[in-house]
Image (tube, rainbow, N blue to C red; front, side, top):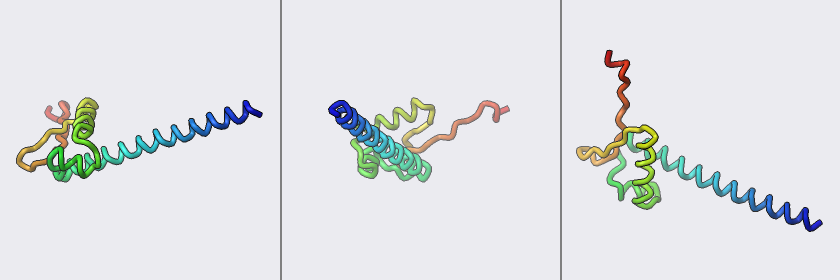
Length: 96
């Protein structure tokens, strides 16, 4: 009986941790897609403005942008529009 209770408690803890991690991933993905949407509209504003919109710290926004760049996205800050923008990758085969 004790073994069953211990396993049940452990599985409940694992279930809660799994749901918590899933929720954190969902929140992160929601923020990331919102950021990419704002990039497309050229309405991100400064890093501080973006941090306020995404309800993140400025350093977390910076890390997210670095991670997206490392994943191959060309994200730059456009000083004219005062926004981060995503540059479309140019395919070498299209040039020929």
